Length: 368
Image (tube, rainbow, N blue to C red; front, top):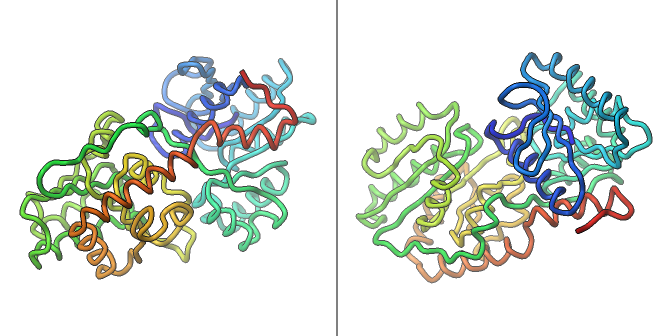
């Protein structure tokens, strides 16, 4: 497996790479990861996974090192499958292929944003790999409609959940008042400023309980801007920018939350878009009712008034109305939370994700 990056580096694709490698290992399939991550170059172990870190450097230099490592590994032992967690790191595998199938995952933004020569290169790579798996039906449909992926190629393969061990736990938010929660990378597409402004409007209109709190976890380029929005809305006592949190802290925040806010929008004419919405699915796994934007891959699993509330993130009135409705109706919160949790339990699992890859790329995948 080639991965653009890998934990302990934070990020969605990094988490995806590790979880997929663990799931492959759990299915009885040997998996060696070639990547760039923190720490010294060379082999190391990440739990049950063997990782080769090519080390730092510029993008082209890292590509050359990854290519040389892959070539040496392919000569040393035969591999049944070469899997790239994004299209860029499929290039070293294509240079080294010797009859083995090559597959990759498409997530969303990374295939929509490239233009010019990079778009040409990307399409060339996606034409040459044998199998393409999309993390959402939205991403696959968009890739087909834009001609990024041939119409007869690709299949949907939903992500699993990193917090799957928590799925059996009962949601325990029974304290006074209302606790809202958001965790994401603080960039414009996530539309956190609109969530804060909506909370400010409802507070000014007297439509929030006196004891309410809105916790926002994550880091990103909008951190300073969001501090200004909080100040301008008069919410310095109620809205907390927590910065980066640990996995244990995130679990606690999910567990305490009454509402999860994620009013994402698409930008750059639809190129900068939410490909899946992992944190939305995580909140659903905890039985937390979500308010999610209509744009992007969350449409695969957030069904309005069934597994969440779907809003137009560009309309503050939409966010305010959804927030007011779900705050004022505890039975609706419980119903949505229960349905959302059930959907996640039945559909989102890393073992299912790995199984689908193995079933379509290897005729008789090994199992324990």
